[in-house]
Length: 597
Image (cartoon, rainbow, N blue to C red; front, side):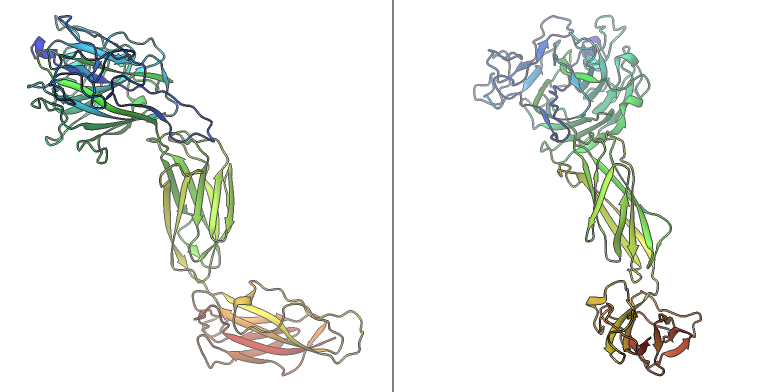
């Protein structure tokens, strides 16, 4: 490219971010800066000046709606066209309709705008802004975004013009040599002409000349070496050199996380609703020669023109701290669960690399599905509890840095014997104040092997007093049972002990059902499950007093087989003994009498 053509318009964009630090308990997303550049003055302080120029005729960066006065960015000369906000055809634009203009469509210009105060990077930044590149007939060179190391002195001039876009260096040109921007850490170029990716004129690395490309070069320590880039499809246009007036905006979103994850998105509709990734997220700190993300940064704009030109302007800049992006994984332990036994899940919550660090405590909730009930939930620095089917765990540890996980939670559940054969359990993690939109969900599906579960309930139906009263200390049996069958139909009597005296006859009732998910068998398929009732030494079975009814729900005419061995009464149920068709009703009952000794 001829020397004048090499001097084609180059803009470097960078952000001004004012850090707002609140206590972790109070801080969520913070709008660090909002600057439209559309009015007569700016609401933020900038430093503006000139960069490299071959003629000395450059105009400094200016506000197209500016009127001078106290603004740290001066008003544009009123003779500079076009006027897109008024009717006279010359500047200034109407207040509210202006832009930050870094160059006109004239040749051999250079200017820059930087922020003076270093900005901490501990929360990361998401930047939104509109770019305009138009009116240069042939069009060049492009727009870039640069991040400068805030721990070194602020630069006083932009980097080289032409294909270096005010960020990288230029060497051996004979006329236009210049160093790269002082303190550069990385620069993102929206390269119209195509030389930012070209390893010529002293630039280090790159695939070669590439028009309509978004590309990144690295730090001053790496000699601004090429990092990565993407050539955009023909339909995705960000430069309009044939347009005499300001075209619709192209929206840019750039995120830099506290751990150095960089991502570049663009919306070619100008609505900030249709962003597409042009540079997928990657860790800039792992690139050779980069080093760690500086503890603070400066941002700035720069622009230059040569033989080829464009108006290059910025509008509607908003920067916020990066919202945390939470992650959650949930897996069951083992190959599957078994009914009537405990099952275990492992849940791990964290903050993703591409989001910001958490600024609130995080809370995990898990609503257990049908077939599971809560047993316990434990995890280092987690506090867990359950109310009905909802398990809640609050993280008691420090906030999470980007790319880190909280300690895992071990969730233990009791699996019902008649649980569904496939259970899907979904959990959610969010900030404790729900500041993370939607949080993160994780689901796990586990196969369940159901089991038979024959439950027996014992009651005292009546006490027939036959002995002397009062009498010495024998008492009726006390029966314990799990669960309480108060919701079951067909159960009579009381489970508590009643006063009894020697000679009294007690009538007992036994009630049973298979509340499991599969058929119950005994020791062989020919035998059903056995119910045993070992009588206490104070009781004597009344011969031939037992009666048994089996079975309803579902119905069967099978009779139960009764035997007595010493003090133990035993009934063998039908084989097979199917699951209860209705879990709220018993399937069979037994009554017998015993005399109190």
